[in-house]
Amino acid sequence: MFVFGLAAWFISLPLLATTQVATQIYDIDFGKDGEETLILLNSGQVAKVPSGKSGLLNRLIESKSTQQTFNFVLDEDRTIIEMEETESSAATVNLPEEITMNKAVYVPTTIASMDVAKKYFKNARYNAKDSQCFNRAMVWSYEWWRNHSLRSNKILVYFTRTYIRRYNFEWWFHIAPYVHVMHNGKVVERVMDVKYSSGPRTFKEWTDIFLQKDPDCPVITKYSDYADYPYTGDCYLQRTNMYTYQPADLQMNEAWGYEKDKFLMDEVRGAYLEAFDEVISN
Image (cartoon, rainbow, N blue to C red; front, side, top):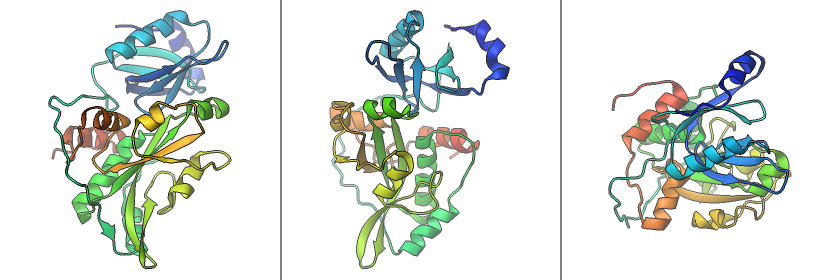
């Protein structure tokens, strides 16, 4: 077990607003001379290591290569002040035991009207607590499928390292469901982000909630279109189906042709527990 700054953490805990998250490390951005090192977590959050903390940074580099899961404690500015090894997490990437090549075409449902889409949105469960976006999105998608036979999609917005550093932004990705709706005689796409909006929103209306100066986010078709150019522009959008849980699913799809064609109940159960404090059995 590795514990960083344990004594200092206990002394400062009552004085600081801290965030705790159990997750793995997706990537490390070292920046330029004198800049903070950014730790991109699989949870979607961006943590920091101040310059001069070489011991902590070396441990983080080692942990990334071994895919170790940690309980991270972050201060108000998202600087890592505590990290402790743990066995599992809702934000852990688990590779499939078998890689299956799925070439089936995913056909989403077209909702009959905007009024129906708004009804689904209004009736979706909500919890004011801080939670992981991919867990909320999984529960909403799963319940719309169970309750209404709705085959929705999901949309990811990736925030570039350039944007994150410019605005001290706290996420490197965000995910939400989106649906196809018959509206004014044509099929349109609307994002159903119950946490951050008051109703179905266009892609642009949705990204404008999070991005300063309202940039246009180009739509990409492969995960590598973002991963290979993480400093270009401000943001990227990527569509996917309702079974996608985290960006790792899209990495595996591109690398190995692995694609989910059903909900994985371990992910669904973990999503209910983390996002809505509910234990489900099925």
